[in-house]
Image (cartoon, rainbow, N blue to C red; front, side, top):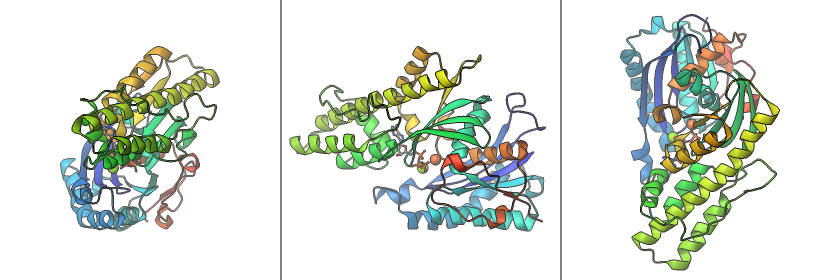
Length: 361
Ligand code: ATP
Ligand code: MG
Ligand code: FE
C-alpha cells in the first residue's frame, strides 16, 4: 500500500510517498519513506519575526503542485500506483489547510482514489511507529511552535491528552525570548546558540508549575521574568544576552523535566506493562541539545526507553501524514466522506477517533 501525504498546516509546504507491504503491524513489516519533500517558508516570514498567515497561504498555493510532483518523481511512483491521498485537515492556519485539503480532494477526485483527512497531531503521534516500529502504548511529548502536550498514545485513533500548556507553547516561548533579546527569527536555534556561551546560573528564572499537582505546562511567567531581567540591565551586551539565554534554557529544561517526570510516573503506575515503556519526543524544540539530554537522563533514571525520531521527521513533514493515512487504512476504519470534510483550525487529538476517509468514486 502506497500513500501520498500532503502537509500545509503552518509554514512548511510538504509532500511525501510512504509505502508499506502487506497489512501487518509496522513492528513486523518495515514501512519505507519513498520520498519526503519539505519546502520551508522561513525566509518569507523572517522579516516579520513570525509566521504571517496570509503570506503562508499564498506561498502554499504557489509551491504545492511542484512539491507534489517532486514527491511523486523522487519516489518513482505514478499517481496510478498511489492507493490513497492523505492530507492534513487541521489543526493549523486555516488558509494553508484549505490549500492542502482542496488540492488533495481535487487529485483524489480526479484519479478516483480514497481520500483521508488527517489530524496533524496524529501525524506527530504516530511517527515513532514509522521510524522505530514502536508498539502501543507509549507516551508522546510534543514540543513545537504551536503545541506543548503530553499524550498517551494507546492505538490508532486512541489518544489521551494528559497535559497541555495553559498559555504559551514552548517553541513560542523560545521565539518570543529571542525577539525580546533582538535575536533573529526563528528564535529557538538562535537562543540555543547564544546560550552555549552564557552562564546558566546568572539569572534565577522561575520554573513555572514545578511541583504542581496539576499536570499542565506554563511558560508565560518565565517569558515575563526574562523581559524584566533584560529591561533591568539594558542596554544588553552580547554576554548579557548569552547569560539570559543560558539561564532561560536552564529554567525551561528544569520545568520540563518536572512536568514530564510526573507523566512518566503516572504511566508506570496506571499502565504497568512487561515491555520497557517508551517516551517519544516530537516537534521542532526537540532539536534543542540541552532539552534532549535532560529528557534522556530522565528516561535513564526512570527505566523508560527514549525515542527521538530524526529531526526531519520531528518537525513538520508530509511523511508523517502519509503514514497516519496508512495506519488508519490498516486499522480498518470504516469509510466516511472525507470529501465533505471542512478544515479545522482547532482539532484536539483526543477527538480524532472518528474515521475520516472518503472514496473518490
Ligand atoms: P506546529 O507544528 O505546532 O503547528 P511549528 O511549525 O512552529 O508548529 P515546528 O516546525 O515543529 O513547529 O517547530 C518550530 C519551533 O521549534 C519554533 O518555535 C522554533 O523556535 C523551535 N525550535 C527549533 N529549533 C530549536 C532549538 N534548537 N531549540 C529550541 N527551540 C527550537
Ligand atoms: Mg513549522
Ligand atoms: Fe507540527
